[in-house]
Length: 88
Image 1 (cartoon, rainbow, N blue to C red):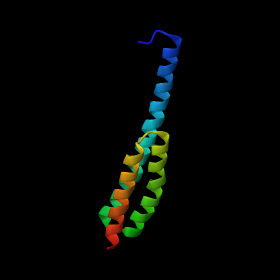
Image 2 (image 1 turned 45 degrees about the vertical axis):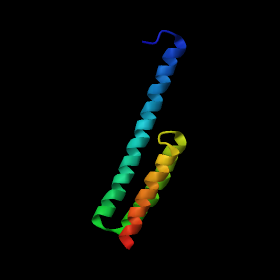
Image 3 (image 1 turned 90 degrees about the vertical axis):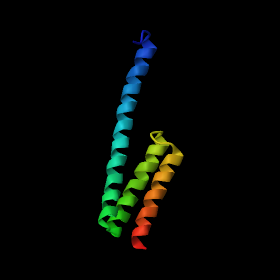
Image 4 (image 1 turned 120 degrees about the vertical axis):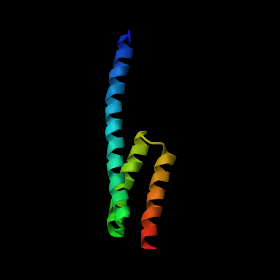
């Protein structure tokens, strides 16, 4: 357990940040699930719309440090590739 005043404050800050990061991660998963469902149903227009919605969310998470930059780019790239394959 933290003994100093600064350590106690650091714990409070960590708890707040953890809650925010969990919320962001959950939000990304929800948006990604919508893309996955649209791909599974074979609806390219719905998948494209869902991809346009998830892309800024993923990139914002990378910017805020929830995801690594390369991880975010990889996720967006793979989703875009699968959406594009629906049309082919």
